[in-house]
Amino acid sequence: MSILIVDDQETVRDVFASVLGSGGYTDVVTAGSAIEAFSILGLGDPSAEILPVDLILMDVKMPELDGVEACARLKADSHLKDIPVIMITGDTDVTRLTQALSAGAVDYLTKPPDFDEMLARVGSAIQAKWEMDRRKSAYFNDLQEKSRNLEAALSELEIKNHELEQASLAKTQILSTVTHELRTPLTSIVGYVDRMLSSQDTLGPLNDKQQRYVATVRKNAYRLKKLVDDLLDISRIEAGCLELSMGNLDVVHEIQDCITSLETQFQEKQIRVSLMQDPDCPSEILVDQLRFAQVISNLLSNACKYSLVGTTVTVALRRQGNAVQVEVSDEGIGMSEEDQAKLFTKFFRADNSFTREASGTGLGLYITRHLVEAHGGTISMTSKEGKGTAFSCVWPSGNAGYQPWPGEEGYVETGQETFVRS
Image 1 (cartoon, rainbow, N blue to C red):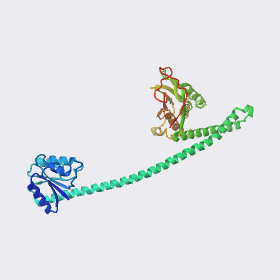
Image 2: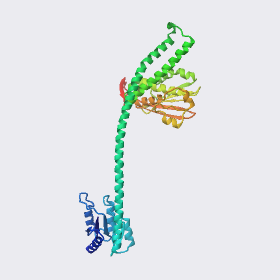
Image 3: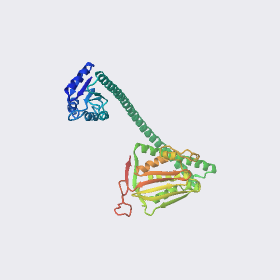
């Protein structure tokens, strides 16, 4: 237990040291000024050998630097601020005492002191410091224990994460292998069924029942083939090896082809499809033709699937800076804000009576989002229940920075390019 007495009068220092000694406080250090006290405490000198002090008794009135200012400096130091300071004063100036307490002093003594009172106040201050030190020690011990527990949890989490990554990789590899194995016989089934329906002149006619059976087989085979293709796309996306074969594409012509391929679906629901292009919208973009068609076909198919009979699906093309925006909107059932937040996640399907009747796996929009993003583009949607839904995908003009459009100054024919986006 070490106590530092700071007073410019040697007699006062000796008396206080003697009184403290009588109370059992024998480790007493004295200083004749605040500057000398700072030196003992190592204030302002990080390399100095610091004397550990548990309590400071400091005179208010001292030359060079008074006790109030000295106390304020001690409390401003991160290493010394927790040492309790008891001020010593020879007068009863309330203002100075208030200033001392405001500067961080915990108590004060008047000169000449009452020795019993002095020892009692010193004991109280030291006891308070001990309690504070005990709480700090307990706090830091608890903090260290929590830190160790956190490190252990993080280590375990890293192991689990690695195991999950390995399991996910194995799942992706198995998924890819299985879907590849399924794709070959499915392609044969679809091919033979199509041949049966288209070659009745040479293979022989089918009666009505056979026609229905073959049509059912064909419909379900195509649905299964679509699922297999979706699963293959997911395995490529999640493995980070989605391959894109980039080339210049006539946007309007490609969208018209997509609409034509879905003509039967639109006719069944008497849905009119409107294609609009702003005058300043370029007619060509640099994309993977098959993947672009896959995105547009999926958006058109969804628009048809969730549209009401006799409504209109609109495809609008607009120029957006150095990119092309393709918006597919319908006048269908729309969706809730809760469903919108989950729309692009894997296997999600809105849960209502209308969607329950419509076939689907919940993979289409998940794949669509990744295909658009693989081109460096973005996809978004707006929807209102009972009013309809609009999907907007923005396709960059080229695969690296701004590319002039056909007809603009600086335009160069890019040809074909194959690359992999991860």
